[in-house]
Image (cartoon, rainbow, N blue to C red):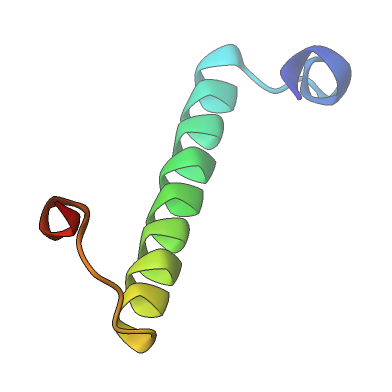
Amino acid sequence: MWFSVWETDGMERSRAVITALAAGVLFGLTMAFYYGFTFRKHNLTKWNDLR
């Protein structure tokens, strides 16, 4: 993003890094919540209990 858009807009690199990290954390937490929700919804077995 920074190389293609933000650099020409004048955004500082440090702000671009912070923005990218925040987006990554938000995406990761959203996906963890989603998969945790579907795990409980479908009563799936934990990996360690499959043996």
